Image 1 (cartoon, one colour):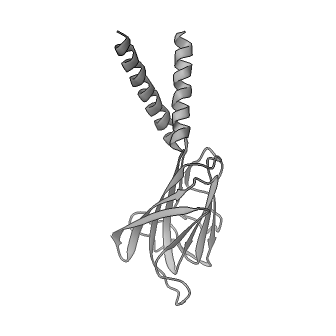
Image 2 (cartoon, helix red, strand yellow):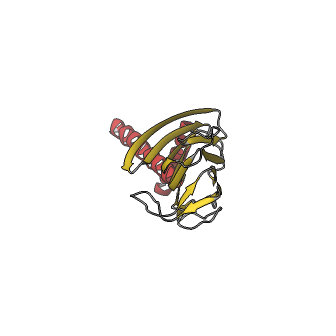
Image 3 (cartoon, helix red, strand yellow):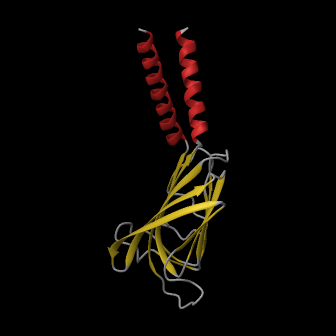
Length: 200
């Protein structure tokens, strides 16, 4: 009987810790989408889910068009230049952060040797970073590039710069803060303690 009690107690701990982990993943996520449908150099996101504050975006460009959008979006297009994005986030510096950046773009019209004709993505701050990129051909020269970026440790906010001699038709940035395993374990233990207190 005692063994069974211990087993169920351990199982309950695992379930509670897993629930806490799922809750942490959901609560620590942000989502922001820009389609650039107006020639606004500091456009608010078209869609935003960020419990930590409002993201800010600034376009460094002098040319916008609503007549040459990508097949998937067909909104306004900026010729870059550069885009700078500020995203407020979970303000506890620990663990790591996963960033998913989706960019719809094509090589630009400028003849400038200082700007590459592909996106150059910069993220600050970070101590360590891993990044990968997958491209999907949308036709007519347009490309959807998906960047998966992980930075350590999780910063309270990040600045993302997109540079290049490129046309940009849409941008989506999703961030997820992942706390240290010790933090998750503490959350699980705290939830378990509350559960036991209720039972008592």
